[in-house]
Image 1 (cartoon, rainbow, N blue to C red):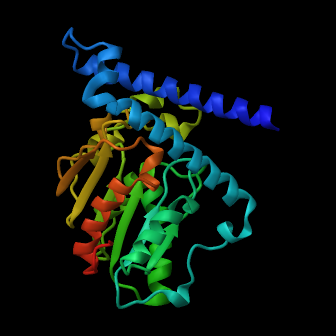
Image 2: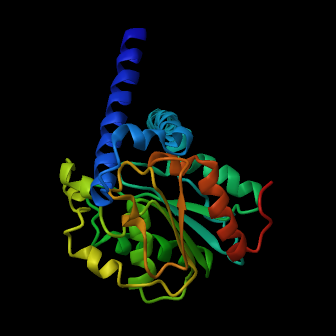
Length: 286
């Protein structure tokens, strides 16, 4: 058992090292000056890259642990909300997970949101096998319409991570309704990711920048407060500035985590909490 755990930890470490080597190569190639080397890149900002790498390794372990626990625990797999607990007189936060994630990844974020008085929350679950860039917003529309019909809720705040951020943006810009009052995208590849060329599924490979879908996405702005939060150390969105959106009210760049850490990192939540504070009219967490 200990041997298998050791192999798993070493294998995950090797996987993360490979991803960050690809990330470094991609970033260095785009901004090559002849002065940048792998060693000098690691030594930048008092070894900030190494600190973030190990932080992201821990976040990834937490991510995998959450996924496994959710798969085995009935309490995590039951519906993430009860219609009877939704207050129709307050905005409803809809959290949308990323590709190969589940709503359970938001457990810590939901606890933090509750700490600032936001309990009107639901999580949207979609299947990566039958959800695409083209139909994701339609599935979200059906989900929100059902909740609105049954509860009478009128205002929606969308928070989406990675592919979930693309679904949220697509819904806010393509669906003709006035429900959405705010939109927050976390590590969403609005310009695609070059890592998609290594994708093992049709959905993963469709996230390559050459997909024509992205040309329309980056030319469309949500007519509501809209922020995009992304990290310079994102190892899945390559290059990291593919998450930049010209029509966002704010593009917020962080340097504290990689792609998986967006569910757990305190810096991410601080920026998100500030944004939600403005749109929910609640107190910021202490």
